[in-house]
Structure formats: structure tokens, C-alpha cells
Image (cartoon, rainbow, N blue to C red):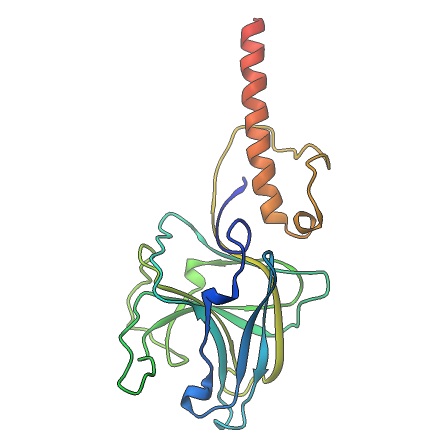
Length: 236
């Protein structure tokens, strides 16, 4: 059963650096720094330095989407973070964050804190990391908030990437290379599931991004099966 993919960043929605905003612990007196560098439209790099000395073991460095989004992900099963390879995974723990609420800025220009829904993942190796909705936990200023209710999938206002110290567990330089961030859901089909070999003309990006390749194969195979069915019915 293949995955139907809705690209949020990367894939058919190329990465652009001006779609992201920095939000590091320097707003609270820390010294961490993060960057979202677009190497190509299909390759982004979330990187920087996580400092835990300035805030006594705490610290965070993050990038989030610009402005206020209006994403409706109802009907999808979760988020895929596609890590680029073959040697671009640093083994550190990251979090993908989602927000339903963005409040007006304070008088001093700083953002007001709101609940974030975070799903943690470890960048052990290149490939697709699937984060299902059940993996997202409500947090407020880095701590779990059990009375936050449920994530409203019909109204996602912000998407973010975060490197956090987890109260002293990790620090230092970090670097996460990405193909894409996308929503996914399973789609049943009746066509033959083989991918037809290597004749699809795919380049290196497809070889290292199995989700995108499966999605493309499913569409091609389904169309081919439908054509053959029509032809055989006509002959009979």
C-alpha cells in the first residue's frame, strides 16, 4: 500500500530560505544559534550550535515557518521528515514542531509563548522518518503540558525544526540535511504493485528518497493497469 504525499517543504514545493525564521534561546539570554541554509531547491540544511552554558544546562535552537500558515492536514496520518544521505546524519535528537496558536507580539517585540506540539526523532541515518500524530506531544516552554487538549489538524499555523538540550542531554554543533518535510497517508489500490524496474528515468535524488519514488511508481502502475484492462475488454 503506497503513501500519498503532500509536500510542505521540498519535493514539489522547493526549499526557500526566506520562508523560515530563526527562534533561538538568545531571546531569553542564551547563546545558541541556528540556521536554515538552502543548498538547492531539493536540499536544505538545518544547522548551528547548541549552547548549554549560558542558561545552566538548558538551551534550544530552532527555525520555524514565516508568518501564519493555514494548513489543513485532516485525513493525513502524520509527517515524514526525509533525511538526506548517504553520510549526512549526525545521530542527534531533533524535534518537529507544530502550532495551532500564534499570539500577537509583546510590547518589547518578543513573541508570546504558546503550546507547541513536538515529535522527537533521532537522525541515525539517511532515509524517511515517519512521525504519526500520536507521536506529537503538547509542550509549553520545553515541558510537557498534559492538559493542552488535542492538536487541531485542520488549522496548523506553524511548522518548525528544533534542536533542544533536553536539560543537559546534548550540546554543541548540529547539522541535519533534508530532502523534504511532508504529510502522508496510505492509499489502497488494486493495480500490480511492482515498480517496473529501473526504467523510470529517475535521478540520484529519487534513488535516495524512497517515498517520492514509491508515490511516482504507484501513479504510473495504476495508469498502466487501467489501460491494459480497457484494451483486454475491447479484444474480448
